[in-house]
Amino acid sequence: MELADEADKIAMRHFRRDLRIDRKPDRTFVTQVDTAVEKALRERIAHRYPAHGVLAEEFGDRTAKQETRWIIDPIDATHSYLRGIPVFATLIALERAGVMELGLISAPAMRERWHAVHGGGAWSGKRRLHVSRVSQLEDAQIFYASRSAFTAVGKERAFDRVVDGAWRDRGFGDFWGYALVAEGAGEAMIEPELYSWDLAAPSIIVEEAGGRVTDLEGRRTYAGGNALATNGRLHDAILERLNQA
Image (cartoon, rainbow, N blue to C red):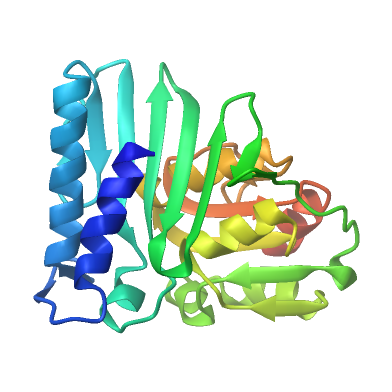
């Protein structure tokens, strides 16, 4: 929570103000806020837990094979942040010996924060989160970032098979789709491309809310690549549509 408080202060200090915007080698954008948040959190972790490793988006992997490491996305949804859209967040997770111990999503412009501890449930403030009980795809609400992301990896037909069978679909994208699944506001969040720092914190929050998180082949992982998070009841049905020949 202290790390999230620090990140929130930095992010809101610059939100909807002049930003220095650069392009990374993968042609995605980065601002001075992304790097400032990550540096601040790395410094706090190094001071408090010098034996811990850190894997984060802007400065990479400093784990040196430590058993315990923090996995951080300083600003998830940077492109929303730089356009003044309030749907952005800092994602913080802690992994120990291959087990995700905690995850936190802090979205200061939305005045929202979600967190989970392994075995302790998922929470938004004092409200415990539970995934929905919807069990039929035709009654489900599906979240994603954009159809073009599926087109870029040649999975647009698989994506269409899912949303064509659903009640409703919305491109909320990024962390918010996972949070909404954990809250029971929707049944699935699908991403064809992402990294471990995008998924680590959301994955434990969804799972502790009673949901399920795998890659698009059905393997339980938060390593990135791609992801499907659901209320659990619809997981296999969505996987089947995604992988239909």
